[in-house]
Length: 39
Length: 220
Length: 231
Image 1 (cartoon, rainbow over the protein chains, first blue to last red):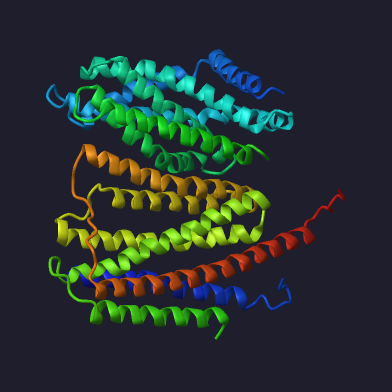
Image 2 (tube, each protein chain N blue to C red):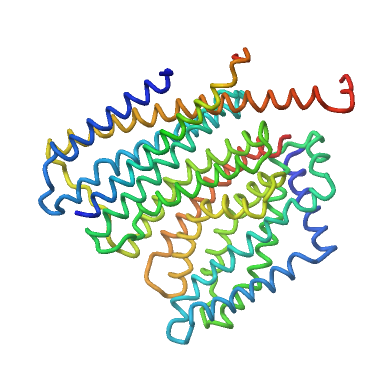
């Protein structure tokens, strides 16, 4: 059933994309802040 | 300071300043009539469907008027920074909130004094005590929520956008129950008593919650 | 690989396992056919979303009580992850509705209150974006989050009641055969793990962003042209 496929493709794309984007953002933030400002 | 006295004093101040300028209520009244006009054309109302559609148009008109009215609730204070001054007095924020909510309710009721007869005039809907009671009961809860969120967005950029966005989802239960109450009162199927019971429950729930939240919102 | 990346890998692995169960282990529904498999992730997402918004609620309450920045960051994290899961729930729900009921949408209590849920927390995120960051935004958001959390069951209840006055299609819960139940519980558990990992990642992002902003504030002070007056 097409609806089934579209539904799961959407869910995987959104959740996976969100996860990937968040991890990338985390990398960006953790990178240059190595100037000793860790709490 | 006696909180009830404070609340009444705040309500009086708001209503008095509105009476002096007399800008909000006439504007709202005009606005409400225009909303009915748009409703008539938007819904293609004729004598056959008028009684089915009119209850809905009532709520649209009321919601729009409410948003305009609450958008203004804190406008005067902003202009004069008198909210900060009020909050520096020993008056409790809940009392100030209650006062503003009371004033807003009165203003909204004045609006309804125009809306309901106009609705009857334009759409031939019955205007009994049961219709009035339903609208009044819904107004109380909607006013409490409207004033709280008006206070919340008062100091935020784009407050005109945020107010409807935050307030409308919370008004939905009132519109569901109120819509049903008005419909039943106007002769369409459904239980009037149950709807009124729900409205009362929602009023109690949200008046209590908004009063509790007022402390945190009005407390800068 | 950072700590968060390892957790993410585990969460993704678990979701793959759940996916295998959904498509290979769970039996096909007799009445609805294969499209019924949407149910597993659709409902799991809804539950994950509610979990996220509970985090927002608790974060907001703790913040109002103690002005804890940690609580506020969890609230921020919970809100964005919750909105993502709610989106998944809504879209999957609509794609399930179309073949089964013939329409993408119907005003039944669950769909309506899920939509309201989405609107409330989308509003929450907007408020955060528009209010001055810091205490004002956190306070406002806490109140919005708390009211939002209360509103959803109230809306659900009103629409359920409204449906007694205006009958229409209702989402029915049949009893599940054991294989389906097992698949569902597995999917739900894996989805909750994913939600937790996402919240943890977003929490860290919020913490680092806050620090960055704080740093920017300090730099502004140091490089300001006028000397700062001592308090």
